[in-house]
Each structure stands twice: as C-alpha cells, then as structure tokens.
Picture (cartoon, rainbow, N blue to C red):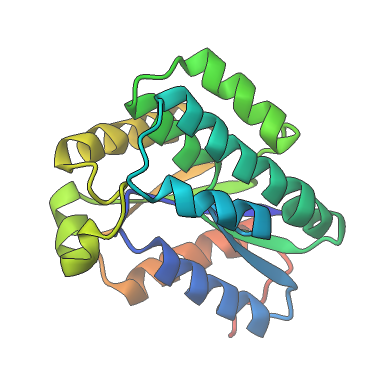
Length: 205
C-alpha cells in the first residue's frame, strides 16, 4: 500500500509523515518512509543539482525528477510493496504533477511520463495538506530561501496550490485536509482515514 502526503513547501508534510509512521508502527504494521526527490544514492546525487541554482531547461528538470522517481520506485518502493509494507511518501506523484503543471507542462505528456517512471503504480490514498501560501511561508520562516524551489516565489506556489486542488477534486482516492489546523488534529484526521483504509488497524491505541 502506498500512501502519499502532499502539499506545497512548508505546509507540514514531513511532520505528519513522521507521526503517521510512528503510529502505524505501534499498530504492528510494517512501514517504510520515503521522501522525494531523493531516497536513493542515485536520486540524492541528482537532488543536489536540482536544489542548486545551476541553470536548466524546464524539460531537463522534468527528466531529472523522473530519473529520481524511477530509481526510487525500482530500488525502494516496488520491493517494499512486494513485501506488503505500507509505504508513506513525503511528496510523490502529486508533487511531480502539480509542480510540472504549474510550470506549464502538457497534462497528457506529464501523465504519460509519470506512468513510465512509476510502472503505473497508483497511490492507495493521497492526503493533501492545504492552506494559503502565506501560511506555508510563515511556517518555513528564515529557512524558506534555502533552495531553488523555496525561491520560486509566492506567485508560483499559488499556481501549484491550485494545481494540487484541481488534482484532488478530479482524482479518486485523494482527500483534502485543512493544514491551518493544529498538528495534533491533523494527525488524528489522517489516522481516521488510515483506519478506514486499513480495516485491520485497531482503534484503541
């Protein structure tokens, strides 16, 4: 089972991934946490260039992301799913789609490329943490300008947020959670969805 937690930078994805993995472990469920881009030695090497200010064409950047994703699926995600682990992804297919669509890429082309990179594996559930861009910027604080992507600007993140919301409304197995809520409340909402998704999970812990 593949669960992806999505949202614009600074929205709280990593925190919720960590909380969810910890809770699933208390339920005796074998989990694996992954993060994109990266997650493998190959992907981490490419990520260093992606987050740098090295000039690149948009299509070159897209294929670099695809290379990271392909390696992550081949090396990590597909074997974990074969072992019946629950894979929790901090960013995933939704990030790839929303980012590239916000950059002006062709919807059909991006979908076709994504299918190739992921062996057409689709997430069981995608959790979109949504809040105004101003909230994410405030949360990230002084760290917001660390990388090329953090420097993309508020206007771009507004566009990406709209693409995320469009995907969530048009795609099955997406849920939208108000990310302006507290960390605890958000984690409990996610937990309730996981209980529905994993019927064997106990509700007493």
